Length: 89
Image: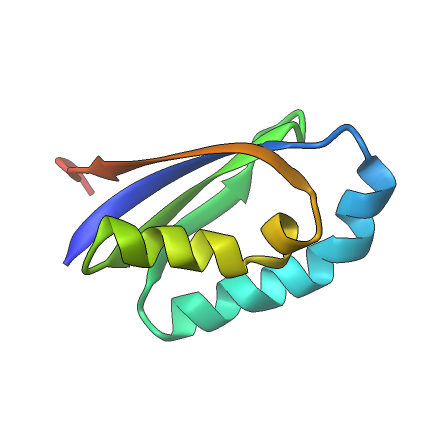
């Protein structure tokens, strides 16, 4: 399985982010429970986040990001996905 680092940039609408965050976290927990999410967390300034998916392909990682409520409801305004090689634990 490949690992993918996802960098997200959030919109400036903090109210939207707060309203959607419970659905977003529920979605991330579902991925974690399926073994598809290794790490996730917002940057300290809440301007975006880093997510590490573990899946078979870039297309699968893109599909997971596309299904995230933060994406579908407009919280994410920019994102990038790159395959990542873990070197240290």
